[in-house]
Image (cartoon, rainbow, N blue to C red; front, top):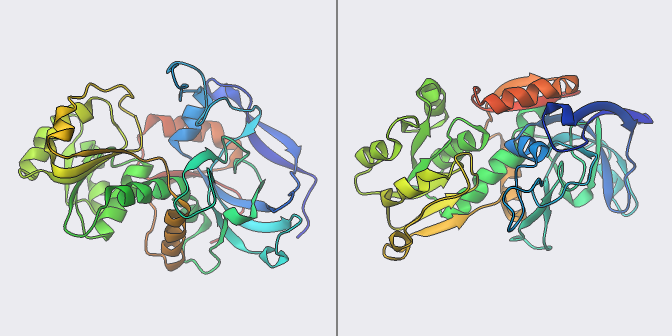
Length: 353
């Protein structure tokens, strides 16, 4: 396949509003040692795109500092962590049989080389991502999905949202027969949690706006409680003996008010802070009831391989709320910020049917 010299890319040039993201023509990157060049088919949006653009992650000891996912961002940066596409060039030390392969990219940069490694970086944040026609990634990050029945648009929904959800389920030990609560259930990670937890045989109580309840129920929720009302009072009425696991992407005051809904020995797994990062917590409720408060950031390499297996078999079908051309990335991020949609928003290029 002939690769052009230049490409269109959406680059973050500073922290700020939508104007911090510019759509420009730039040179196509060249793959280096152990790297491949991918012609991007689709790239999904995530809240991390907004928070990185805004610099909303803070720094240890300085919660208000402008920073990206893991610290200062090296501008300009091409955003977009969720990438599916075709390998069109290989760098030194890479098997050329990868050429022409349809691949899904693991977006995590890990702290070590083993199955249980933890993410310490992210493409689209610590290195360039998929808001471009081409992207260079490490060859060991690509997973062949040639036989998957999912479209490029659907596959692009998986890495961050479903990878994060699978990591939460694994760290929470969710299994058949458990009763779980999913907060923020209509968002990308939330809907993935509902689908994957239900597929494991768990009973899912989902917290969502009532206007999105039908879509959340279609994803597998047994009950939907109104997040705008007394969420945890509704949960207590549905599960008077307590729940086994809370899968939480909202945090904030919900942890304070909801901890008593977790039964002895249960777990509260947090992977987001849509409701605020500071909490007021009575730690006696943790240790007197052997409750585990677990932080969960994305997935491990083992989790991602399991997710790819689900994708190859078509065992999970992401909900796509809307698609956009790369030139419309500002509108896509604005739509993401409203949270009026159910499912994922995706930037598409040449999409596999």
